[in-house]
Image 1 (cartoon, helix red, strand yellow):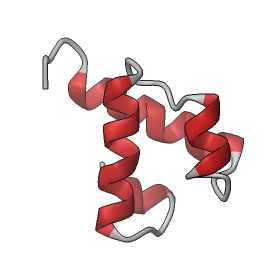
Image 2 (cartoon, one colour; image 1 turned 90 degrees about the horizontal axis):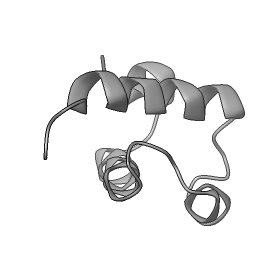
Image 3 (cartoon, one colour; image 1 turned 90 degrees about the vertical axis):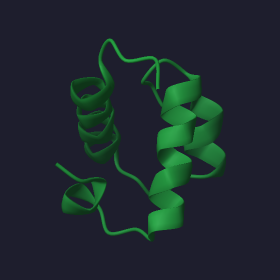
Length: 61
């Protein structure tokens, strides 16, 4: 599943989102949420975090 199914964003933006998630163990930090991804709803953030965990669980990517 792709982030673009949940929310429409440019590829560079979704790459940035996944880098934030990777740095913070699969969670979007409050700072990242407020500064870079404020347009995302709580539901969208939860769904994106779920996708991240499903795809990268147990991987050292």
